[in-house]
Length: 115
Figure 1 (tube, rainbow, N blue to C red):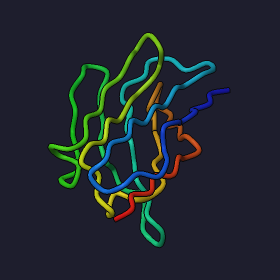
Figure 2 (cartoon, rainbow, N blue to C red; figure 1 turned 45 degrees about the vertical axis):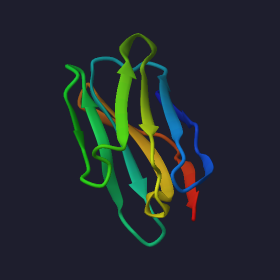
Figure 3 (cartoon, rainbow, N blue to C red; figure 1 turned 90 degrees about the vertical axis):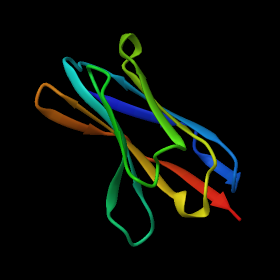
């Protein structure tokens, strides 16, 4: 059974930084991509950033220039460095892995940015 565990969320003032981590455990093989999604109250879950096994990345327009996604394949871990945080970055952040044709989601970590 595959489990994704996120950490690093919290409360931060606008302009601050947070680093999210997500590690997969269990029988997970051939990871093709890892990503971070954000869901604000009343909204759908939207892509924030994604990285492929080959290292290609793409970001939501709102994240470009402020957030950086990276990964450690040996640890089955993906990171999201978030700088210059804004109030509108508030939400629950979920990691998502795609591996062997399946998708796996973490349980979510709350990020709250105060003004």
